[in-house]
Length: 154
Image 1 (cartoon, one colour):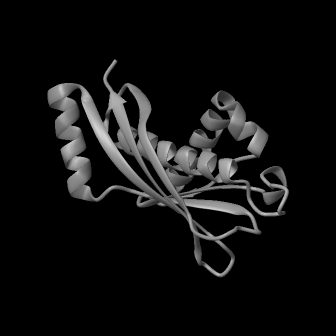
Image 2 (tube, rainbow, N blue to C red):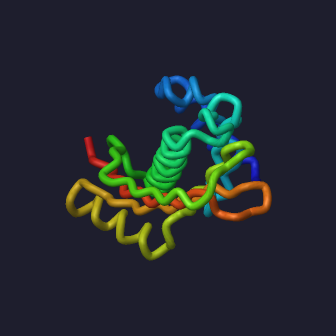
Image 3 (cartoon, rainbow, N blue to C red):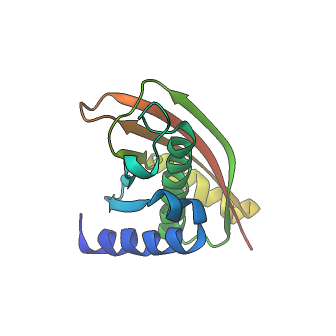
């Protein structure tokens, strides 16, 4: 992770912890930002259910935060100012998770980013579709999430 991306990840974590009470309660941390991927995690102990696996609501929360974070970072990189709102979130729970919750949000492709910027310039609104995966220690997907986010000009 280069120095600029490290600073972006640190600033994002400060923002999330300051403004999202659920993130504080879940002990969410921003682990890394590489430009094409954002990694956000939380300890199992703070997000566990009665079956000793990751609570579904915590997994959803972490995915929403990771996707919002990727949208926030990409919007900043594109020079888009405004409110970011989630428009849609879909999650598939594939298998139980018995270890740290680690969500990996993927950046939209370059063509999608160009389209988002053009839409923002024309209509004052950019749409980002972000895919997030949570894997177990064997790198098997436990959760797959797709979120649709809008950046709305102020």
